[in-house]
Length: 246
Image 1 (cartoon, rainbow, N blue to C red):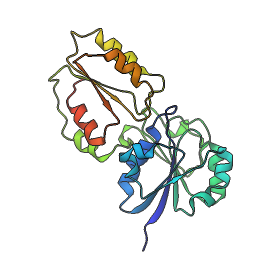
Image 2 (cartoon, rainbow, N blue to C red):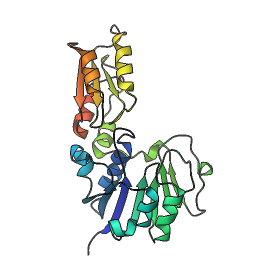
Image 3 (cartoon, one colour):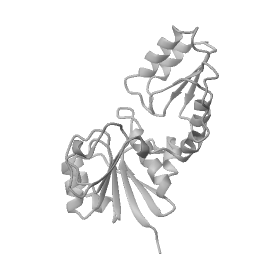
Image 4 (tube, rainbow, N blue to C red):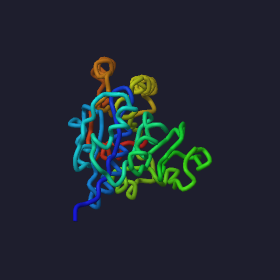
């Protein structure tokens, strides 16, 4: 018997970052042995994100159109599914309502609780959130708080073997896959003013980061700064393990 199908709907680019794709892929990686996990996305850089791409059985590239039109045609675009997992701020109450009218069951990965949810399950890894923060159905189930953080396997394994003492003054700087307002540069500049407190700075930037030229110009020949671009999950774990501060 074929595995049941879960469609993950998430986007990512240099404006909104890649977090929706990364955490959706983390959940897909947990489920892919029992389900056919399909990603439906408008992101055009999936080939640059092998850790994301490899979590899914199949990827559907969606056209750019209004989200209202997308929701109305979702069943034609993606085909049948046993479940749709939504991760993104554009998938508001109206979008969700249209999908449920078309017969889809919904789960939502959320961190802003800013509209009505038509989902049977809501996952929010932020702290201090309760079901009372949500407008949803009485039967909606909630998985709230850091215990439900959607992390990939390499990070979960590394967390079990973490060190308990500070043994260096190395620092990792990472603001996600895009960092659209370039906080990376701001923090690196500040750390350079504290050179007596920092041994080595590891800067991690993603595939959607647009400020490589400015960052490289500032760093110049500084030997105590390493820039890592679009690293794999394993590389990210290795870099984090070299640092006592973040």
